[in-house]
Length: 190
Image (cartoon, rainbow, N blue to C red; front, side, top):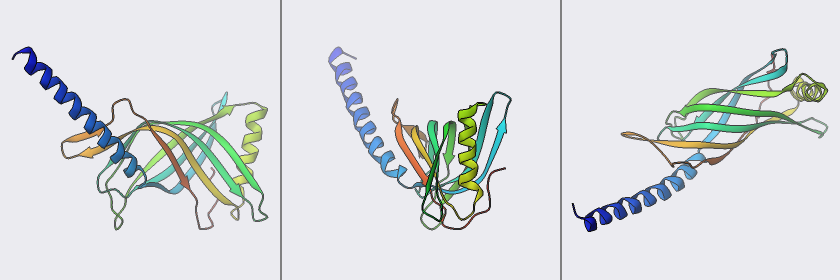
């Protein structure tokens, strides 16, 4: 193969890669809009002696016809509560890292769901964390409060193709998932 052929082949591969990455990024961004939190199944609080940890079990829903994958998601977890008298309570629970969550394919008729656990380091055993704990208990203890869970951060996102997964190399997508239950709930915190 001569030098001119090699250069043409390399230029063609570079253009194809650029086109694929641009199309993939647009496609993945559009598909992210079809992912939502459908339930908060359980919250548990533990103290390991030096810090408070909160585990939040959630169910995610995918309405896309193909599976999606979150990889290395770094999410800031916030709980908002509105009391019947209109007063607000916002508790910044802390950061959570999800290594990998694969969302099965779905459609508007049959959504694909998967459960995931967000493990959150709430903070060390000190007065500031104790204040956050009191806020958390006030927010979730009364079933008449309207509670919203917000996961906000970034993640690498993969799209399932017939022969494997595709994701934009080195690209992280902004993720904001909000869950607002419409029904009165039992106290979730264990």
